[in-house]
Length: 168
Image 1 (cartoon, rainbow, N blue to C red):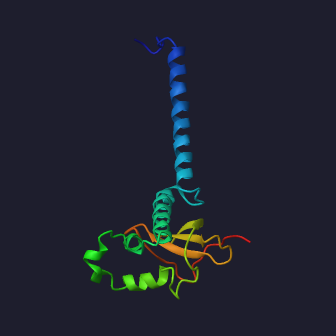
Image 2: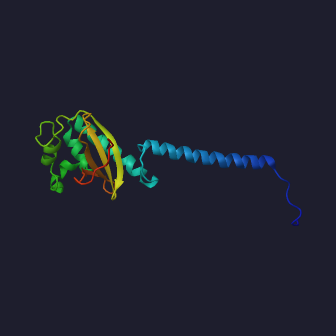
Image 3: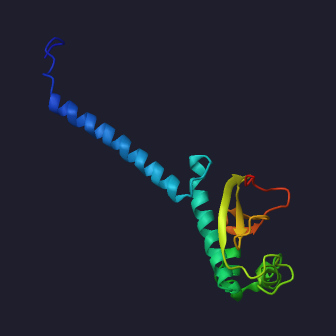
């Protein structure tokens, strides 16, 4: 076979290749959009979307436990240790008694009263943690800001100088 003996053009094969290429690109685009929607529409880089997905899920699960007044399960989620009762001295920096004082329905520290509902209104990856803004009990004035640490999957209160802009 010489250079001038080119194979005959196969139009059906080219059509198949074109369909496969555009179909693959369309499927990839659909997967990216679906993942973005599942992650909660983050206005963040795509490599942070998994952190958004896991963080929002963990905070929702935590808040649902607090709403049910199951503070032992909520503390296990907060510390990312469902068996925390077997070794409570491991968590001396934030003990269960202090946690109960912060999140309990009859606590003087809890300025929201009995927590009945929550809504995540903002989330952003900031300094290797996910900073999440919550509105508690439909309250529009003062949001609660929590941080989710993706390395060890624990929760914490956000420092007072780190807040997200929630709009007017």
